[in-house]
Image (cartoon, rainbow, N blue to C red; front, side, top):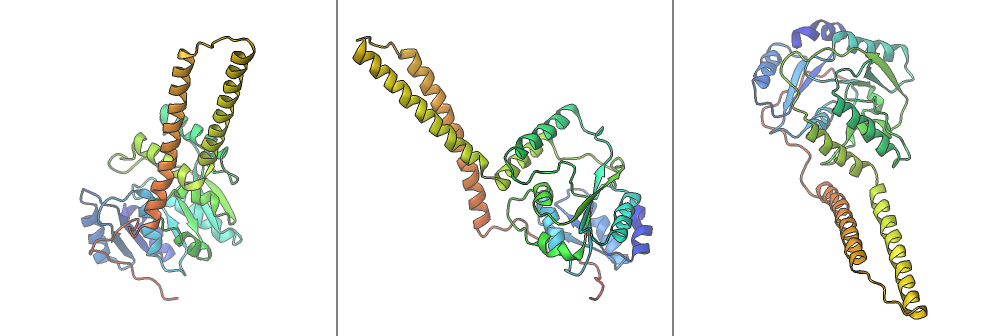
Length: 296
């Protein structure tokens, strides 16, 4: 991968910072060999795998505030040509703070993955005053002027795709072609995406809490009206209302709602607990080497 981009990095006089997020293969050894030979290449090594969101946070935390930043994957899918398009656009448009490279096609996604992504964003955007843009991803050029804002996010649970839409600033989207992975297969499974999606909803909005509150109020109101109706029948007609099956169904329904409500509340409590505890979002190992940053 380094050889693929070396000409571009040399031309731009860029510095390169790799984030090794607990790789189990020889990734770290390869990065170290390049970092020993080339002063503009450095790396930070996380003590284990903390996930993509925290890997981005770790990388941003190590970049000096006077630097423009390009965030990109380490699998070779973001080509030198795509990086060059982002940089050329930013140089031609100084008023733009952050530019995202967006895929020209989503043919790479499977049917289930594509459907899940589509309905996730549709559902989440119904809950948010600031809609999420499903095209914004983890390939972008950010100016040093907004780097302090990006470095502020240090929660144990983060959702960067939500942050990109939430932070505002002047942004642009550039269509790019994504190449196939150079090696290996993605370990970001459907269930990991589902877990990230749930964390994202909890991180972004309190709407589910409002929803279960409204649902609880509605059920209480309906139950009260049923009670009045049954009492009225007994007082004015003398009819004893047979309600065995009604009671069973209502208990099952209300019990399900209560369990769902407790689950939603538990998710929010878990996020509060994680983000108010002393546990950091990631830890660095002792083996780290920053690149030689240019002097301010």
